[in-house]
Structure formats: C-alpha cells, structure tokens
Image (cartoon, rainbow, N blue to C red; front, top):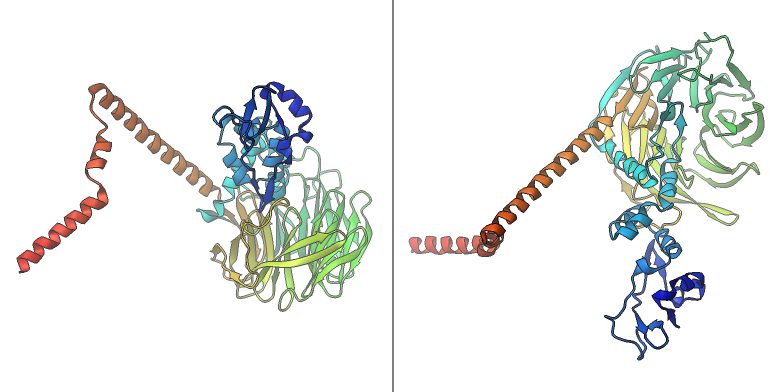
Length: 538
C-alpha cells in the first residue's frame, strides 16, 4: 500500500486510518511495544512512498523514517503502553521525544495509582505546584520511597497512662491521633513531636480512629462512634478540649458490641464491630444506611469506591456495597484469627496479617460480573500475631505482638492496570522482609505510615515516630558530592586534552593505556617472576 510523501503530510494525518503504517503489525506484550522497522523511499514519478520490498524503490539511503515522524496522536498511544522506567528512558532519546514523554498524561496516572492525587490543606500542600510537572512530582515521590532503607531518628511521645491501642497519621495536616485503654484521644504535631490537645475521657477503651480534614471519628468498646467536626480557621482542625464556643462533637449509636475498625471516604463512615457487622453511615445525615452481616467478629475493613474488604474471624470478605452482598470470600486466610487488613490505593491488592504471625498479599481480579482473589505472595516475619498493617507505595509495614516492625517492599509485586507482571512470583515461596525495626519490649498494637515517617504504639503506653527524612537529606548530599566530583574530573580531563592539542602531543592517558595493558602486564610480570624463581631453585 502506498505511503504519501512528506510534502503531503497533512493529508496523511487526516487519513492515517487508511495509512499502511497503521496496517503494520504493532505487537504489544508484557508492556513492551515492538514496531517493525519500515523503511520508506520516494518514488519520483508518482511522488509516493511504498515499502522497501518493491522493485520500483530507490536505495535505502535516499529517504528513511523513524518513530518521531509518526503523528503525535499515534506516538502518544505507543507511549501509553510503557511503564514509568521505560517512559523515562524514551524521554532521553531525542528532543522531540523528551517533550512528548515528559508531558505525557500517563505520569499523572502513575502518580494516582501509587499514592492518589496530592491533597492540599490550608496554605500548605503535599508537594503539588503549578510550576512542576507530573513527571517531576512522580520522580521526587519515587526517590523518597527509598528512604525507609536509610538512616532514621526516633521521637518518643509520652502522655498516655495505659496501653496505646490505635494510632492514626493524617499526613495532609501533619497531625497524629492516638488513643487506647485510658479512653483519651490525643492529638500530636507530627514534625515537632509535641502534644497539641487531648480530649476528655470518653468512658471506655478506644480501639479505632479515622480522620480527614473535615471529620475525626473514634470507636469505643461501648459500641458508640464519637465524632468531631473540623472548625474553619482553627489551625489544628479539631477542638478536642471543648474550649471553643461552638459544639463540634457528637456520638453515633447503633452497634451492639465494641467497635474495632473505622474508615472514611468522601460520603460515608465505615465501622466494624464485634457484633459481627459492618455499618455504613451517611456523612450528611449521620444515619446508618447499610449493614453488612458477617459470621464472626469483624477485626478490620478497607473500603475502595463501590467495594469493601473486611476480616471476620479467619476469613476475608469482599463486598459489593451497593448490593450489600459479598462478591467473594477467602476462607481461612490465616491459621487462627485474621487481625489486620490493608489495601493498595487502586484497590486491586489486599494485605492481611494473622494470628500465625504471617502476612499475605492477594490480588482481586474482576472478569465482568465475576470476582476472584489470587494469592500473590506471603511472608513470615513475626513470631507473634500481626495486629496492624499499613501500606504506602511501595512499603507494607506490620506491627506484631513480638514487639517488632517489619518493612516489606512490594514494588516488584505490584503492577499498574496496563501492565502484566514483569516477573512471576510463586505464591508458595516465603519472602523475607527488607528491614526489621526492633527496640520494643512488649506488644505493638498499631502502626501507620506516611510523610517518610512510621508511627506506632503498643502495650508500653508510648508512641514512637520513626523519622526517615534524614535519609533523604543524606542521599541528596551524597548525590550532589558525586556530581561535583564527576564534574571536576571531566573538567580536568578537558583541560588536559586542550593542553595536549596545543603542544601537539597525543593524549597521555590513551598512550599509557595502549602501551601498558593492565592484564597483559600483570600476566607477563607474573610469568617472568615464576621463571626466575624456578631457575634459582634449580
């Protein structure tokens, strides 16, 4: 089929659906794109381009085309099949591809799939800036994600008089909320590690907390949900002490047993209880609108859009919220009770922790109206029950009764919706964690992760914040020093070459390397020494 000449490129763009280039075989597999090399030549009589296999063509040197000669819409579709690493490599090929790859809309999707869109609170922001591209935001967040392998400092927060059952990190407002057996909800400054406010005693143990910039909720063992609404203009959002004139706290009743887990989204409050139910409350009317019944105590829950994952006894449920029916059930996910649950931001992956000290990773797969769950990997980092899990790409952090924190990098196991696994992992193998944090003398009940920090609390009644921002600064200084050394080395090299060129002498380094090959010299010297020693012995 004929191809139009460059002079008629506009006509080609308008009729590219009829172009022979689109009829060529574009093979996409495993996330990679293979484009058959098509060489074009110009036929002078008709002014058209035809495949190089024709006898009427001129030589290949007359005219050839590359990927940058394709319509930009087609290039964009090709780039859409790449992962972040491949897209970054493409941006280094040429100026044209650098512009197309750097400004590609896929970078925003990559960021959203891993961490969600940045949340702006008040005058501060989580990194979103009008001057910065999504590629720059993604690259910085990806760079920061390696901090948990570096150095850290520990802030120890004192204030609770009994064991801490729950910690919650509100990263967008840089606040930490904690509570436990002393029935008091405390609010801390994440960066300074200082206590900001404390509520009055709520009358029972608080086992669950959840918050966003509009609402703070706490679940008690008496079956109530205590709520605080945020106040406009209040720096720390919530008036826990009740000093403000406007009354902002209230309670929701409905559960018949202790509340063990809470979660929020834009429209609903989700609460799980030992009364074997999950209740869904409407945030505008503050009334219970749906109830999901289970067969055992509910220990954890994780909503995502129209689905909800929950743990009940040793089983894991995946619910359709609209229909109030389970899509699928994972029976006996762990030996004993499945205490903890976490979910990836896309909602496709579940992480569970159980009484057996193990952690498992599942993928939720949907085929039309059918939903299935597949075990992807498992770990055994603890010798006691795993009471809490928290996930922020790519790190899964677990807290256990053995007083240890396990950090697991699941980067290689996760995938975006457009990609298949680059490497298949066997679900029967047990992977080791990337890092273990020690130093606790008793049970750890809760953990949360965000803003390069890990917050945990346990039976000691102490809250600890592991701060890894120091690792980021050290890495930046190391990279800057390496860059300066490389620049100085290249500058000295250029100066030496210029001096040699002026004096008419060849490059001394090249001459020395040519005259004295390292391996050859060493071999000859070794053999000559051996012959000499042999003669002496003879």
